[in-house]
Amino acid sequence: MVPVLLSLSVSCLGLWASGLILVLGFLKLLSLLLRRQKLARAMDSFPGPPTHWLFGHSLEIQQTGSLDKVVSWAHQFPYAHPLWYGQFVGFLNIYEPDYAKAVYSRGDPKAPDVYDFLLQWIGKGLLVLHGPKWFQHRKLLTPGFHYDVLKPYVALFADSTRAMLDKWEEKARENKSFDIFCDVGHMALDTLMKCTFGKADTGLGHRDSSYYQAVGELTLLTQQRIESFQYHNDFIYWLTLHGRRFLRACRVAHDHTDQVIRERKADLQDEKEQEKIQNRRHLDFLDILLGARDEDGIKLSDAELRAEVDTFMFEGHDTTTSGISWFLYCMALYPEHQQCCREEVREVLGDRDSFQWDDLGKMTYLTMCIKESFRIYPPVPQVFRQLSKPVSFVDGRSLPAGSLVSLHIYALHRNSAVWPDPEVFDPLRFSSENVARRHPFAFIPFSAGPRNCIGQQFAMNEMKVVTALCLLRFEFALDPLRLPVPLPQLVLRSRNGIHLHLKPLGPGSGKQLC
Image 1 (cartoon, one colour):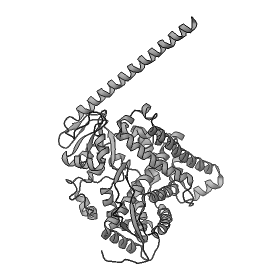
Image 2 (cartoon, one colour; image 1 turned 180 degrees about the vertical axis):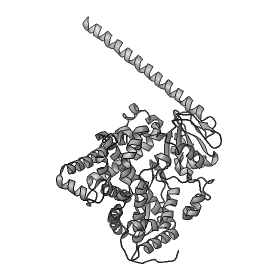
Image 3 (cartoon, one colour; image 1 turned 45 degrees about the horizontal axis):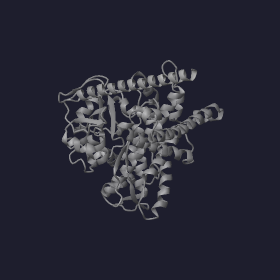
Image 4 (cartoon, one colour; image 1 turned 60 degrees about the vertical axis):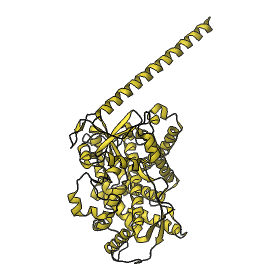
C-alpha cells in the first residue's frame, strides 16, 4: 500500500512540476511578446530592412557580415532604422550626428539586453553601472587618469614596445608576412600590467598569456551571444557548449585578476614595499583603487574592486590592441602617409632616442593619421543604451523611455552625408580648421557625453608612443594575398588576422620630403 501511495504522490508531484513549468514558460513567453510589441510600437515611425520571422536581422548579418550590411542599410535608411536580434530584442540603430547627440549627450544607462552578458565576466564595474553608483565609481577612478599619473607612463609604453619590436626584427628576417595582432595584444597587456598594476619589467608570463587568450575567447563568445537570439536566455546559455566555454574563460580571467590584487595587497602589508610605493613619483591605477574612499570614508568592496580591475584590464588593452593594429594596416595601405608620419617623428626626436611627455603634442600629422584610422576602423564599432526618459530627434521623430538604442560608430564614421568620400583615407579631415567646422558628434571613437571613455587620454598617449616607435624601426607593407576582413567582437578585430610585411630600417633610411 505504501509503495502505491508513494508512486501516486511522485506522479502527482511530477504533474504539478510539469504544470508549473508550462505556466512559467507561458508567462515568460507572454512577457517577451508584450515587450516586443512595446519595442516595435516605439519604432513604428522608423522604416527599416525586412526581418526574418524568427531570427530578425541576425541571420542576414551573420551570413553577409554585420559591418558592411549595416553600412548599406545606413545608405538606404537615413538617420536610423530598427535592428532586431531575434524577435524579442530590438534596437533603434543610429548613425547620424544629431541623433547621436540626442541620446549620448545624456547619461542613459547601458542596455542590459547586451551588457548583462558581460556581468559574469567583468562584474558591475564602471562599464555597466548606472545612476549614483556609476557616479561614485567614476569619481573614485578619475584620479587614476590625471596628468601627473599619465606623464611617467611614456617611458613604460616605450619599454614594452621595444620588446615587441625586437621580436619583430627576428620575424622580419624570414622575409614573409605575419599576423601582428597577437603580438600587439601581448605588448598592450604588458604595458597595462606595468602602468596600472606596477608589474616588474619581466615580460609576460604563462599566466598573462593565458589571460590574453581568455579575453579573446570571451569577446568572441559575447559577440556571438548578442547576435544569436537562442543564447539570450541565461538558463539555456549555460547549458550549451558556448556557455561552458564562456565560464571556463571567465575562470581564467578571474584567477588572473585575483592574483594581481592579492599580490598588491600583500605588498601593501610589507613595510619595505609600502615605503617603495610612497617614494614613487606616482601611484598606479591599483594603488588608487585600493586607497579610494568616498565622502563617507567607505572604500570599494572586494567584489567592486575585482569588477573595476576586470573592466579596466579588458577595456585598457583590447581596444588599444585593435587601434594600433588597424593603424599599422592603414600605414601599410597608404605608404605616402606612413613616410610623412615617420619624417615627423624623426624631426620631433632630433638626436634623441627616447620620447618625452612634451613630444606627444608635437606629432600633429601622426595624431591626424591615428584619428583617421579610428574613423575608418573604430576600435569599438557599436555601443548600446536604454533610454531612462523619452528622447526627441531633430527630424521630429521620438522614442519613449525604455527603448533600446544602438549607436553604430562604424556606420556613423562612414556616413557619406557627414564624411565626403568616406572610404578615402584623408588625415586632413582632422586639421584644426576641418574639426572646427564639423559636428562634435560626427567622430566619437571613445563614445561621447558624460559616459565617454574614462581612459581615452591614456589610450591616445599609448597609441602615439607605440606607433611612432614602430614607424622608426620598420617600413610596413601589405600582403595582397591576406588582406584583413574586419570583424566585430565587442572590439574591431580581423577574421583572418592582420598580416603585414615588415622591412627593418636603418638610422635615417628612406628619407624623402612629404
